[in-house]
Length: 250
Image 1: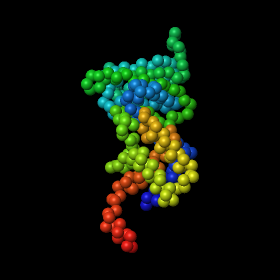
Image 2: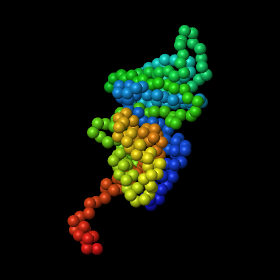
Image 3: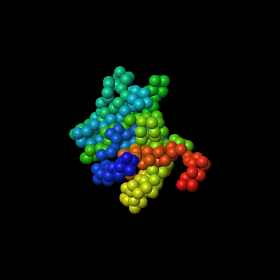
Image 4: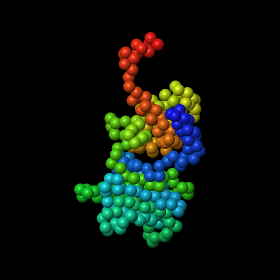
């Protein structure tokens, strides 16, 4: 059954490389510190024609208190509830036909600032760059999270089942097993992409594994199967000394 799953996953990976949006999550998770621009550049938000892009703060229980759009000539926004209610947690951004405002300079790509307040009354400022694109974005928005993608001393992981998360080491182990068992060839282009994914994940501190998978165009079903394969190997009980002797006799 597992061999069949790996074969199916490799097939999916090839399909996803032709159509990257097939396996990509609609909403990307972004760490709050990253979104505040504390340890990295401002997050880029892509907005396509006739589509809305969302920024959601509900996962960290923060409420939007103020929104400042530097150039409102190309974009408009709305919130899930009126800002004056103090309960808004989600911002929706849309493209509009260019408008002219007296004495206001314009640009095709502008920045957006969002102020929030948490339940303790602490305020935070988030900064984003808005970019117009003609094609459909590969995601529908971002969800702000307090979870650190690659915490120091903790290997990044991704949920692969209801009870297991796979680390980079699990995925790498799964790839080694898949090649060793002949599920795929070491020279397969898919394997090269997975190795690129692993290398990037080990050297990136501000992105989740899902975001890195999207960047390297590796399908999530394939990562899941390799992660499960690595976990399965890790959970195998060690062979006892007595069992080793029995095996030698056989």
